[in-house]
Length: 203
Image (cartoon, rainbow, N blue to C red):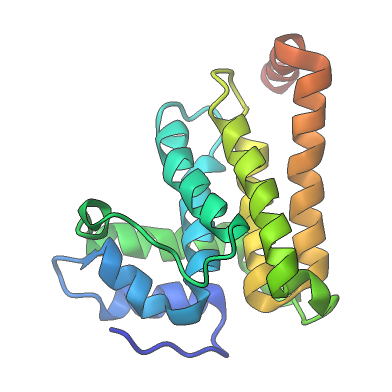
């Protein structure tokens, strides 16, 4: 399970990992090892998927904590993710791995098909540190105890992570701008803006 194909797309990689996983699944450590050099981007993308679901409570906030820890490591310039052994031994069952791959294909497959290497300086080492800082801010906004505060920053992390993996600077910019715009709206409008948006959605 440690072999990866650098040229394979992110979603195809998740699909292969799910298909090759034993029936009892993989530990998180084994999952990270199977991703190789793309571990940061793939893990952040994978964790961002449940965060994107609107009107889902508790789970996005729980997921945002390890996401923030990983983003902080990225901002600090670590070459690969580090997790405590307790977390590395947590098991991801085969059904969850399959759902992760299917969800990624359903929600973001079309974006990956449009991706192409461009604005390469945005996916280089120094720029990745700046992206990590943005991701920390996005994850922090998910922790705000208000409805809808998880979806937009979650999508921002997912899209920018796809950009990192495909070396597509436009996708990186799109994800960062989306998340940053949401945080700006949250700071300017506060809770009143959130509840106005909820009323519009339910109308």
